[in-house]
Length: 369
Image (cartoon, rainbow, N blue to C red; front, side, top):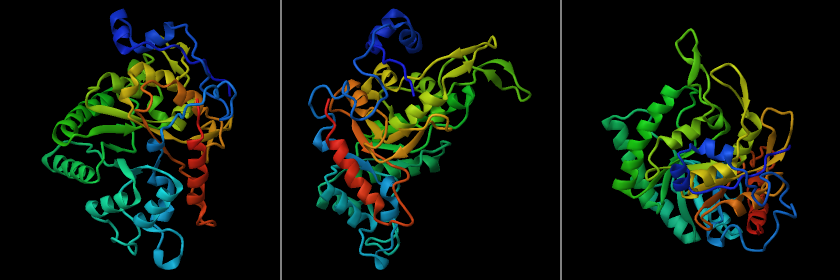
C-alpha cells in the first residue's frame, strides 16, 4: 500500500502562534521526514542508526494478548496458567512492563477468579515486572455511584504501582459532534479526578473508527443529525477539546494504520468529496508526544482490498514500519510500547500465544534506529 510522506512537525506552541489549526498546519507543511510511515521491518532507510528504539526497561505487553493462558485451568495442563505463572513466564522471556486487560483469571488458578490487587502486586514484584495501566471501564455517566467505582479502580491501580489508568474503548462510538462533546466533558472531569486525587494519567485507547471524520455539518437527516463533515477527525476533535494535563491517549499503531487505509475521504458541507490521508506519526508529534504515554505495538501484514487493509500478525512478521514510527516520534524513551496481538491464542495450539510472546519480544528488542 502506498502511504504519504511524513511531514515535518513543529511544536504545538508554534502552531498556536501561527494562528492555525493542527490540520491547517499539517496541510501547509512541506517538509518531508526521514522515513516513510509504512514499510517492512527490515527497510534499509528505517534501519539507519543503531540505537535501541525501545529501552530495555520499556519492553511491555498487554495481557489481552495471552488471555487464553491467563484463563486456562491449571488443573488440566502443565502450561503456564493464571496470572502468577504467566507473569513469571513473561518475565523469563524478558518483558519488563505489563498492561492489564482486567483482573480476572481462571477460578482454579492461585488467588481465585479475581486476585486481590495486593496479591497481583506481589506477583509482579516477584517477577521483576512493572504494571503501567489497565484496560478497564470508564463511567459513561457521572453519578455518586459511578465516581465511587472509578475511585476504587484508581485505588487498585495505585496498589499495583501504575502510572496510568484507562480503557480499551474509544470515548464514544458515535459519529456525531454532540456525543463527542458529552464525552469530552466527562473525560475532563474524570481525568482531573484521576490526576489530582490519585496521581494517575487517564488514557483512552483508539480503534480505527475514532479516526474517521466527525459528522458536524451539512444538511440534517430525518432525525435532525448532521450528514457531512468539516474534515475534523473524531479523536482529533476530542484531543483538541480535552485538557492535555489530564486526558491522554494510547495510540494503537496498527489501528491507526488501518484508519489511514480506511478513512481517507470525507463529504464536505458543500457536498464535494475531499481527500485527507491520515498520518499516524504526524498526528502524535503534532499533538505533542507527551500526550501519548503508551502505544500498542501491534504488527500488521498489508492486505489491500480487505476491509481493514491489514491482518494482525506476530510482531516483526508484518509491514508496519516500526523503525520509522518509533524513530520519528519525539520524547525518546518516554513512551511505553505494549506489544499486542489480538489473535495470538489458538484453540488447537495452547502454547501459541506464549510462543508468539517470545518471538515478538525478540523482534521488539532488536529494533534499532
